Length: 380
Image 1 (cartoon, rainbow, N blue to C red):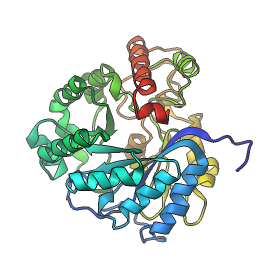
Image 2: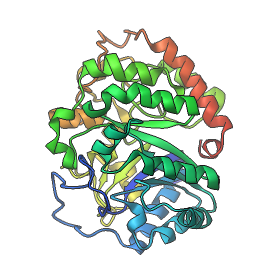
Image 3: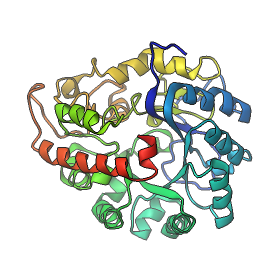
């Protein structure tokens, strides 16, 4: 490895290891891709995953993790073998699962295979059963039962919530439940990738963001890992990174900075939401993943933020938020366009958000959480 290119301390590879699934969720991103690949149409084999994904992430960062998703990763016959290899490579595994296949026995086997270096991620779109069922093709009880199994087995987990028009009314109730339990969450924006293209009516507006979504997120520090718009001050964040010795480029859009997406067939995008489109970042079967991450022009542009357009390009928070690149792409066809859901209207880079002070305070709380709690302090 080039010594002039020091390894990142933390990086997450979001790898959709298979398109196979035992559910039929209404707006699944992995089904019905807009741009079906013309080459490399088969899913990566066990050995390809080890050599072209896991080994490459190990070489790219010292504190790495791979989020195995799909489809449903646990449907792969080699799922445990892949998880074991990931742990032996010194990496953490995040398992994004619908929870239907999880039993106490399987959980024990996963824990053994990973040596405990595993975090489960469950989709909780609403704490209200009817809304959860509508979006997830399964009952709320499946997720609750899976979380209880993790608690009993001493395995870490958190929830991911995909926000769309379908769950806006219950979003505050859902997050308040997680806040009460002190469970971290990750917000995922609804995008029109895959089956989402059939549900354009679920797309969010700046008004939704301003009046419903952002007030809830900015008041819960354990949701701060990645969302936009994000108004923590750039000077504040730079000082905090140094003070707390935390390696996170920013807490807004993580595309190409904190993580990257890889499809089951090995195609790479700056973000998992941008897979299956005509963004030619390369395929791990053709180009080493580390080379794609360092040299691909799309990845580099998204990472640098210097050519962002519209209000994102003139925003004070360009480097600490960056606007959602996926939402920009699906709205305009340009991944460097302004975030269409942002309600902030900066005149130039001197314009400050009224929410900056609060976001600074809660960012401190979030950083204190990940620096003092297992397993997060091992990752950051």
